Length: 157
Image 1 (cartoon, one colour):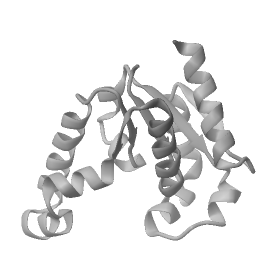
Image 2 (tube, helix red, strand yellow):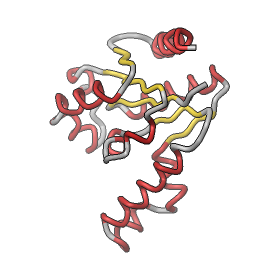
Image 3 (tube, one colour):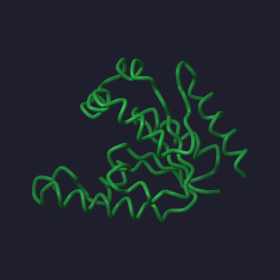
Image 4 (cartoon, one colour):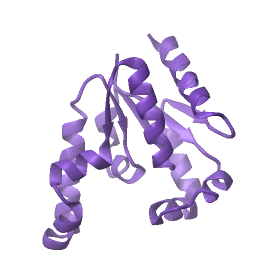
């Protein structure tokens, strides 16, 4: 099976979906944020000691390396995926896990999501353009969202 990339603005929710999918499909799971921290040991220290430009280059190397993995469900934060790197996952099935701006505003719990809300229409446009599939979460249970993705994947086989 091709790799699967889970994208969207609620990263914590995406992680839950990604883990459920990988378990259901017998695939590996990769939380890209954890992978970067593991690979670079400490992005905070690297940023302080080497600067933003160097850190960005190292993060890009991590993404390039991860893009070579097989049989994997990836959860990748928006900012990593869209920094000139989204071509690395062209052959993967990319799912945009969509929450409305209103729904996202009710769960804002970090600075990244606050920024995403300020530029919601731009983020939404980019995600729609980059992904093969859009799953509207609305008030669906997480199990329903997972089943919807599995049904789409079954139709692709």
